View (cartoon, rainbow, N blue to C red):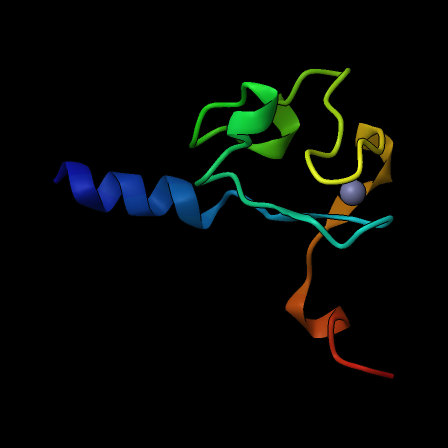
Length: 72
Ligand SMILES: [Zn+2]
């Protein structure tokens, strides 16, 4: 039953998007460039986490919603 539990955990981990460069933090992949292990939810990232792509601060990330990604 372990694979089922893994899927359930991943399902609840929300992706976060950087407002400055549109980099998307995916918890299932983590951020190896910042020393973040795969499977780390955004909420568990250190306060000094910065965007691996543009170096922007953690505060510049917002929960990614596919509904808001459509062109206006
Ligand atoms: Zn960025």
